[in-house]
Length: 295
Length: 109
Image: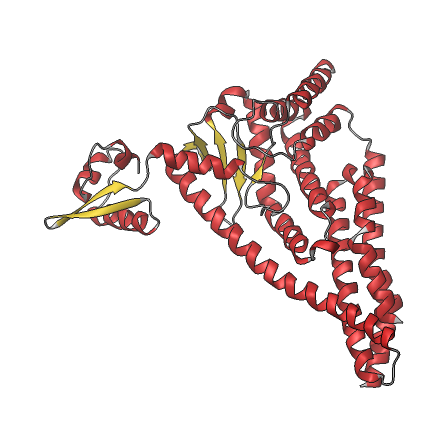
């Protein structure tokens, strides 16, 4: 029965649970803990599916004279497990190489086309009217790219907030977090795929960077920056996770109480532990005992 | 690259070196950099007698366009998170809502 339980848990953690959690607003009160929760869900799903596949393999090998539907079910579970693992490695390689190539090209062009911003060597200003601001993450050698339009449309404090926000993305290695979710997103075959973990991690990562910028520059400077950059006239092909700007501004407008933030963090962390330890202790460990005895 | 972009015609290493007014660089350094830019397809070179002449492989505008187009073109959730933006632009309705929220925040002083 273990393969079926693990398979069901894996399935639940892949589809309905993320969909439900994505609708909740409370994880955003403590974004760092929220990211940990989403990562734990993803890890637990992968563990459950892998466990299901492994236990299925053992089951198929150690039983004979079985009902056809019984075998069919187990083969299906094994199949999904192998598929997800295979796709995971393929996806990881693909995402890594595409991301690296893109970042490399961006960095080269930014270095050649951009002017350094005053005394900050890792910031490049592009001669472009549209307000843009983004970072090109890379270990030890990242860049923050802003346009001259950004510099002109923001006051000093707001510009500082933008730079602090982008630097937070780099320091907190949000690039790794987002890549990991990207890899997972592609690893699951389309019928099992959901946007929720990737979208939510994108939102939470912005909120984390916002929190750093707020501490250093104040809520108002950050608010001015968000409105200036998100509210500008959109030119070429900007597809937006546009809804985030409104969410971020409203968060600044009605900040959560410290108690609420603590409650959110505690809940996220408790659920993270539960979702990993739960199936491990109740299913995986007894199964491993059983497996050792069999082999 | 700025020297090459501003130049009307392909330049030799010596000419590039002369064009770089701000710094004291060795001839070999400039040559190495030009070579590297060549491998990255930013400059192309042609032989002119015994020397090489270097010219940009793409115009400054085209390069800027490429950079911006790539930066702004993160289509949906399937593209990799190669860059992390500060804020993506929103449609006019949301922009109005943003400004209203900002007014609220600024009024709160």
